Amino acid sequence: MSSLKFCGDEIITGPGTLDTIREIVGQRFFIVTGRTALFRNGTIKRAEALLKEVAKDYDILSGIGANPSVCDVEAGLLKMKAFNPDVVIAIGGGSVLDAAKVMTLMCEYNGLTIEAIKAGQAPEKRERIKLVAIPSTSGTASEVTRAAVITFPEENIKIGLKTKAFIPDLAILDGELTLSMPPDVMVESGMDALTHGLEAMINKSADDFTKTMAKGAVEGLLKYLRQSFESGDIKSRQHVHNFSCLAGFAFQNAGLGMDHGIAHAFGGRFGTSHGLLNAIALPYVLEYNGQDPQVAEELEQLSRLIGKNIIDEIKELNKTFEITSSFQAAGIPEEEFKANYDELLKNSLMGSTQRNPIKMDAAKMDKVLTSIYYGEKKF
Image (cartoon, rainbow, N blue to C red):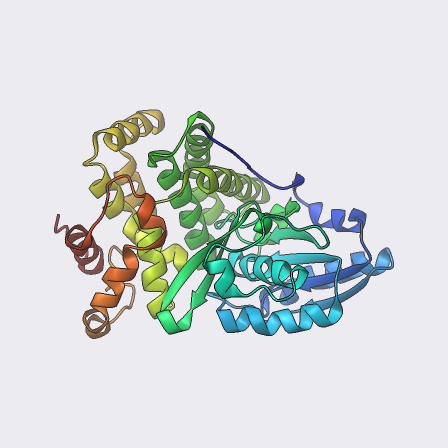
């Protein structure tokens, strides 16, 4: 039996749809956003003007960076509680959306802790505070998922906290917000989305619904990612925005795999971009998982659909986007890799790796990690 939930109440998509925040029911609006990018390009100023236009009270929490930590969430929560919102609007990349999801739930349920959420003791619903997610990058699909990835510094790992209460009530996919993305953010977030689609597609838990969504997302991303990078036109950016969200529908119901488990382990230790880690690891992970007959068949079908070998296509995409072929070349020092290897190996076996098509153990993961780090196949 499958129990599927793809999004909250509504998804609004299309260029210029940020303007629809004027129509959101509520009076006290709390905006959560990042450090500078959306201030520089005028997005936050535009959001403020829209709220003023309809006489809403609002406050802004800015400064959420990449890889938000437990401390970041707890600090932001204090400001959110002091304002006491009935609507939270998260505008930014996946890290901003993830942090806002956790803060909003903890604001609604006074006394709820991150440790309790981590232990699977989170409520499954929100009743009082409406959550609106407006992504400015096209990768995490946090605007429709039940997951929120938070860094736990004491454990040197990023953990995907999960509850249906994290799913935003409203997602606004305005491709115009992606036009000012720096090239590295665009390609790394896009490769994150592609990884979501591929890992969901080959997941043994994927059913007819999630498999079809995952394949559609992968096909669409492969069609528009290069164009989005090379020309940056609104049409291609909106398509990538939409297909990233579709990949989110798939993976939150089917699950992911060890590419994400590895990325969370290395990102938690070194702070390296999640999308970059996913992109580098993806060809190795697909080739390793292709040893499973069912996965091999799925990849072969996809290769026929796109007219070329999918693993070769990912390698070519990485070359086009100037993404290195190893973690070492991405700037992770060898001495630190070796010094922290036991922890990296242990953490790479956690999280999404538990849903990998091939059941992983330390000996298997050792071969995969060594291959990805040095850029030489060891399995």
